[in-house]
Length: 282
Ligand code: AMP
Image 1 (cartoon, rainbow, N blue to C red):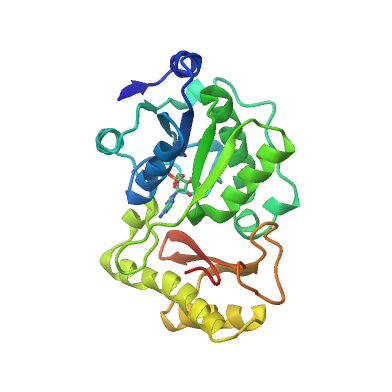
Image 2 (tube, rainbow, N blue to C red; image 1 turned 120 degrees about the horizontal axis):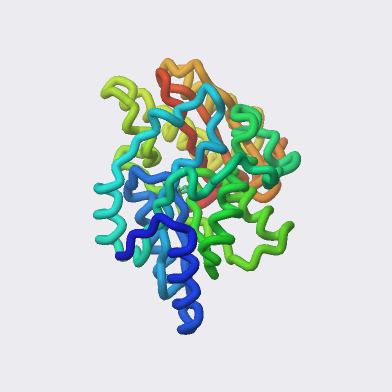
């Protein structure tokens, strides 16, 4: 595995692979890798000859009161995991390589970014889309893989690629969970054992909504109440949103047919976690 820190090195490597007729797959991450990230590598490998992963904790997508400075990092551990999983090139830029100066031009999403995560984290998706656009221009992949875990992010990346005619295929890969249902996340490392136990209520709330949907409940209000009830009974009071939404537009729904998403965000102590499911999926 090649480890690269400079933009020019990535461009050279990708140019050589492309010239040799190879397909390039890309997995952007913020590191502290877990099985969820590594499953994206597997997906990229299935669809490309060369897999590039980036690890970059993007300051532009963190709000002033968020966890940028304490975001977990383990570059050596990550490099080992990435290499073992078959990553060909690991791009680990310093912040100044990506932002030599404060950007004068950014990618600004419209209404889709104003709801749910966007409402709770003003400016977040502008930061995400700007860095993803920059990384796409640096890596120039044929295909890029994102996780369903961050479903609004994946939806916005798809929208950006379509609206700005970016020549990259976007693939969204299912959420990987711990054995007990907790969605894997680098931020789970913030949880103490007590909080880890309570965090199970997030996936539990989603499962409760799924069960109700399977038994015929279609009312979004009712599904939301069921999920919120589950969170409340686990003592989780700091809930940012429980969304019953259209999977493509993320507009709130009145009736949730199969394919609708249930997405939620809640705080366990100081740790903010998100999760979602697609209703009616096996
Ligand atoms: P992050 O490092 O948190 O920015 O995540 C990098 C990529 O991994 C994003 O596309 C995430 O959606 C994806 N990802 C994070 N956690 C999971 C998970 N548990 N299952 C699947 N994909 C994930």
